[in-house]
Amino acid sequence: MQQFDVVVIGAGPAGSHCAGLLAKAGYQVLLVEQHDSFSQNNYSSAASPLEILEQFDLPHSVVAQFWRKLELVSSAVSHTWESKKSLGVVFDFAKLRQFLADRVEKQSGKVWMGYRYLKYEKISDQTIVYLKKKGEEITAIATQILVDATGYARAVMYPDKNKRQPFFKATGIEYLIEVDQVTHQKYSETLVFFLGYQWSPRGYSWIFPMDQNQLKIGSAWIDAEHKYLKKLKPLRDYTKSIIQDYLKLDQYKLIEIHGSALEYSSGLDDIYYQENIVAIGDAVSTVNFLGGEGIRHGMKGAEIAFSHIDHYLQNQTSTFVKYETEMKKIFTEKWNFSEKINRKVYLDYSDQKIDLGVSYLKYLKLEDVMDILFNYKFDKMYRGIYPYLLKKFTQLSVFLQKWLGRSQSNL
Ligand SMILES: Cc1cc2nc3c(=O)[nH]c(=O)nc-3n(C[C@H](O)[C@H](O)[C@H](O)COP(=O)(O)OP(=O)(O)OC[C@H]3O[C@@H](n4cnc5c(N)ncnc54)[C@H](O)[C@@H]3O)c2cc1C
Image (cartoon, rainbow, N blue to C red; front, side, top):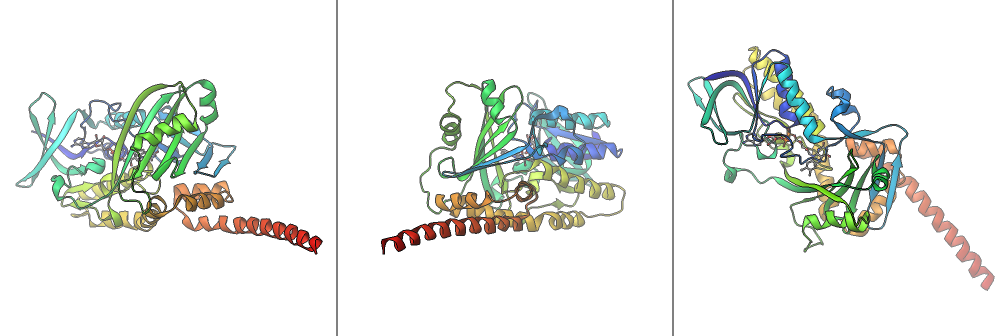
């Protein structure tokens, strides 16, 4: 039976990054992915702020497009913020994961594509992992550490789907389309986010630019009841409406439709470890539920897990309790607040309230919007209220002056 120091299940950004770091540190690592290729589950819109490239040493070859503008559109209001320099990237998600998996192999780790994790069992002091490749016999391998990086599936930590706690769920769907050059040019440097009942009730929709005249048009919503909206169209109808009614595209080439679920544990109440088994990435809710950004955070969590796995394998610790503590220290406060805002805006707000929110977000500077969206600094939201109120006050006093002037002349 083949023996490894660490077996990582799931070659998403978190699993592959963790496996790469462990391989670089000299451990015998196996990274296992159920799909034969990364184009089979190319589900993520994969937008990130620019710092992700440097933070995780990622090359430009995995970037489909750089963006420098942000646009927010609600039913009645819209606004664009613009920078001269690039603010972020949209990855080609398949290329990103291929690059990360290749990095594991470059560091002499092993990557097994097309192998599905079935179960593990403990036999004396060994952890035996069972994997199945289509059309082949079950393979058993032994490992010192087993990592659950299977995303929302949490296949290792929660083997019985019926025994899972209730998660806070969201569903996303995305159309990858090829458009004419003029349309592509118009959106090639912009992330457009849609809020509100017309474009995206119970969540948000988006237009993200890709290379080769392609755009990603998507919608995601929370799988929970809305305070006011009881009957909605199917999710994909909102995506199609952005293509037809917002972009007004009669002709485009549909390249693929993909989508996926996200399952988030409220209060980060996930299982982070069980003896020598460790969970990372979306398997411990590193995805931020405000905007569904998860690549950067999954990779950050993977780095934290790496250092604790390293200590464990060097016999400097016999438990992962400190891993959970460190993760919670970094994520809990901001993630709890993001979830709160998510529930309010996506499930409780009327359309008018969303329009009103966008109206005063217009008064924020680009740096503040970036800080709110990507660093979850929600205190910055209030910076828009004062200019907004000042403008409203000025409008009101102009109106009153005119009105009073008219009233006086009538006397
Ligand atoms: C529609 C949508 C749009 C998104 N857009 C963005 C965005 O713009 N920016 C951003 O940062 N994040 C985005 N996200 C979130 C982001 O993609 C995830 O948070 C991130 O991919 C999580 O990484 P991960 O490695 O933890 O898990 P995943 O990427 O989910 O990877 C888990 C891997 O485990 C494999 N696996 C599962 N079960 C098994 C098994 N039994 N055996 C073997 N392998 C298994 C899966 O096939 C998968 O490859 C989006 C998510 C969705 C659904």
